[in-house]
Length: 204
Image 1 (cartoon, rainbow, N blue to C red):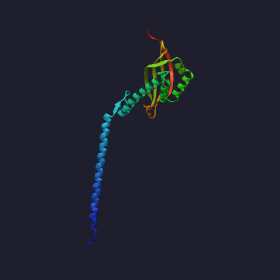
Image 2 (image 1 turned 180 degrees about the vertical axis):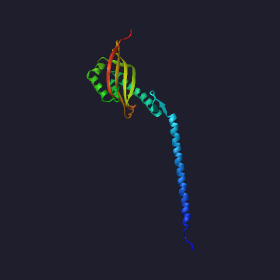
Image 3 (image 1 turned 90 degrees about the horizontal axis):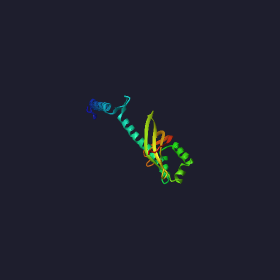
Image 4 (image 1 turned 135 degrees about the horizontal axis):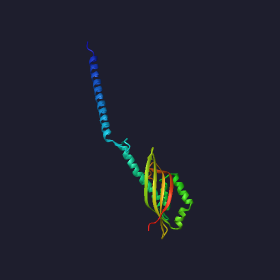
């Protein structure tokens, strides 16, 4: 007696072959993926790390990030000290406004203190020119906290008299969102403090 249905055993056999083929392909694909991951990992072990000064292993990507951070941090500090101390009667408002973008309330408090002490009034009254000649900063990382110390040499021109001063300041740096053009490096100075200020004798 003929039946309109195919032999059930033939159908099951074909289905079994298809499933077996899919399983083999999946196993081959998984094996290839694992091999590629292992191969990439082995290459990374030999080429993606650097040796720190204390012998520890550091990923090169992290090394590059830290190198870039140091460059930007030093540039940020130089920019701030130029804005905050390189001032005269014509540019001090504009420069100080830019400097306040680069630091937190500790910078603002120092600015207000100087203003209350009449620093900027004397700048206007006597047409003083305060010019920065040198900025040298050192940066130290301690448990992801970045401390800096900056030595700023600046001159105050009083017409026929020019006095030179050395200012040592310190503080911390934290990472914030970049804000162009106000804070292009994405860093903020915190705990800013003027540690010492001394007059440098003029060499004859």
